[in-house]
Image 1: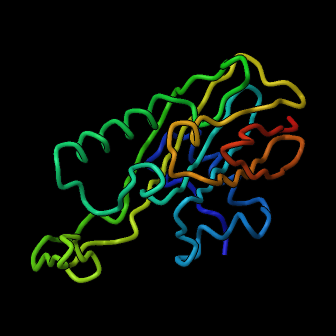
Image 2: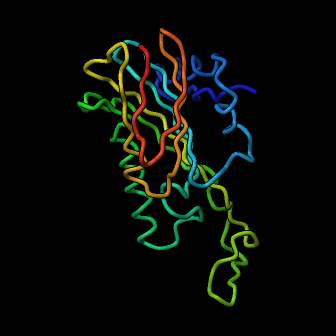
Image 3: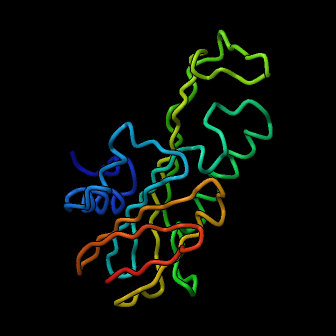
Length: 199
């Protein structure tokens, strides 16, 4: 089993560095997201590849972490929330330096596991939807790719992630990175959102 490679229809540099990540022997935890049983609310995985002042990122997260639900958007408020999330993911760097020197130059956001249908939608006595029985996918995930350009990336660059500040449903973010000097990993939490990359 290998880490995911960014589909070839993504920007060429994203595809190239996505395959670079896939070719590296990342720690076993990095492969957990390829296991269907790894869909765990509160947890997400971010892969990053650093090359000079460019960073390519791939985020995989259960939709619940970002949206607070995984069913298809049923109300105008839910549709608006999903649209806001996509805009944020397309324009806000998933990681950044303390000086906020990085900007998004390319991005792609995909929300997988679209609902199949609403036929036979059943309700329990308490009014809640029974998602397991009316044909909706119950495990939806965001797959996000970003390319960042940074003004400067130092030899031992510290980065932070705004993901857990923006999305309260994300309790833990596993980051695996590769750079010309090697590879490494970090595990971020809401109280510890900083990590260092050796470039």
